[in-house]
Length: 436
Image 1 (cartoon, rainbow, N blue to C red):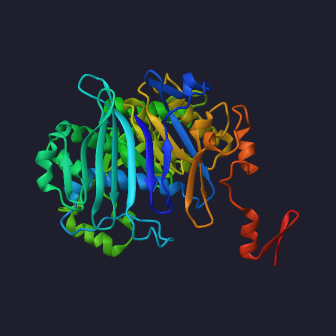
Image 2: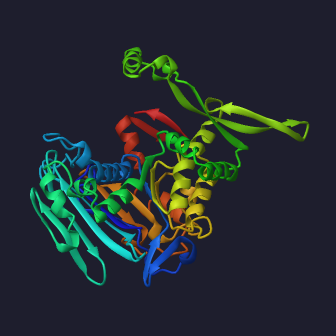
């Protein structure tokens, strides 16, 4: 379970900002939208981030992608001298050459199924790891497992696996990833958890995840049931192997490159999924008709793309982060998916969903607690501020009309439309526009 994620000096996040998935003491929707792992330790099942275009919402998800990827894969993938693809805040002299920093607080089960609280942090510039640390709470107090400043690495008896990893740690990779490569028990568990954490964008196709999961009978059934739940008239799915269609890659030079790299490319195959619909004689179902993905609507394609990651998260109790979640989805479908995560029935393993979207219809006190609602807004210097509704400077009543108040600008994080008119030379007259 993820408790907190902190980002500093990455893209538009100049200052340190933390997204918390720890529930406050409010009792609103506590039984549905939160879960408890220990006495007085409750987590949120879902959170939503709102903000104007270019406010930094997507940068939060890009930060997660970089952080998890580098923490997990820098050991096996980075060679000596390779650069690090971090992106510091570039609109300030104080930050453009400074390192980017990240921290995550999360809970995992140990061998005895007891909850262990971990705090892992990382700071990197474009060439090296500046510092890295791992702390844990095994009993009552937090203890250090390892601390690293540049190549000065110290580890404690709580992290004996550090002795095997230390000699192999390069300046451009994490001790955590190298320790996992050496089968360190704690590092391997943490790296697996980071790998299993799903970070995606709704603007891009996720269907490769779903297609892969169809090979498992249980996953196949779950995905079909999800599509039935979505009420889009999908009865079943069929996965086949078909000849690889090189035309879809477009660029002829790239196609020729692929053909040179793929042995026996003439017989190369790819996965194909078709969607089964009922076939009727009058009102009587008499069979099935299968359509290719190209024949389905963009909404159906989006739901299929989402179905794999969503069902994987729900069935395994994993964190799922999706940017631009509402792309090509009906507002009621967005609401229904969030309810799947908030419900203790459909989410018995306490998966966590964090999304960004613009759909204000779901911004209600019937669906979200105040601590589940977050906003991104840029200041005058182009830096993103991240804050929740419970942190807002003026107390917000739990029975407030969140969506109406948000659109009226009471919480900030909305576009300044008049500024747009001014900058484009357009003037607004009643219901029309005039060139100024």
